[in-house]
Image (cartoon, rainbow, N blue to C red; front, side, top):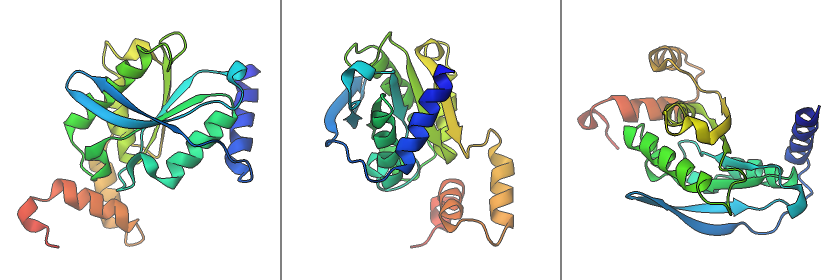
Length: 193
């Protein structure tokens, strides 16, 4: 019942555009050889802190500043969660690169190991589309899985071949998705500006 109420609060906050939160706090997350900026959205009422959600942005040049990620983070903070939106440079450049799996893994560890960012050293992870596949690879690692208590990937697929064929075969498919696929799977010489 409690989870159901938290879900309702999040959905209400996501749909209620009138509520504005304070500006997010910018931090730097560092672990190993990876360091990146992140925006932290704190719960409106600190006593209501329900946990930490890490939002992995999609393949967009806006990265963690994408309005959709900001809207999700705002809804999470209004629902009582600490929302963290890290920046992943290769994902923001629309690259499907195994390095991003390692970077996501390092960010999850950096957040879970910081008592100021996570309660009980566990976090939830929210991601979408192709970033969902990268996120799933990261949270499936043996040393990372115990740090994640929830994982949500919207519009993701575990079978890239099926997605590629489906998207490229359909004339009504999203042009941005086609571009990401072509950018990542055609040799650089075949892509002309």
